[in-house]
Length: 270
Image (cartoon, rainbow, N blue to C red; front, side):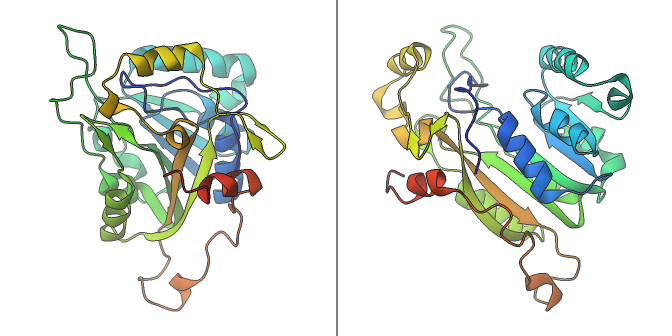
């Protein structure tokens, strides 16, 4: 698909969640939207998807749960986009798990919804380390699916999570999306590290190594998980599932992974 320009920085205390890279954001917007469509970014961690949507002539709405990240994201957007672009960009703030209350006006109206599915693992106040006994908040797939218009797309960016151990959320997300009436299209790989030709440099930075050394051995992630995110692509059919019109390919091969990604997928590391 699209490798990140640089190594991404984790957005959670456990170090297993990463933001949507600029290249991934541009690829998703180009493959899944048309100019003038609404693009919604749930659990946003930075400005990249909003920026890509503005560049493509779309109307972006990003939902943050961290006020500090909103300020940083708006500053970045102001540096790279003209004022008339910023007039159509919306950055909204809500409490975790309460996105539906600030998005009621967008129900069934978005051409693309991108959700960063994170572990949202809280810190233990006494140690400052991830609290393995506190339950991670459940990602509301039905709420995200409700924002997608017929013919539109839901993209969930996720990966292996540290939640007392190592958990793979992909099967449950797919099942919940299907229960919400969406059609599962693809599972592709988005690399979080630069690629040189067909070679992926899986070397970890000092910061990443230090973070891993502080965790129990059972909480460590395999090398393949540390270099990529899982991108799940769904669509809301224009007609009920099972009809002839709803079974045709939605993206016509627009998001096929490139050879570098294929090497990760077929390497047998996961």
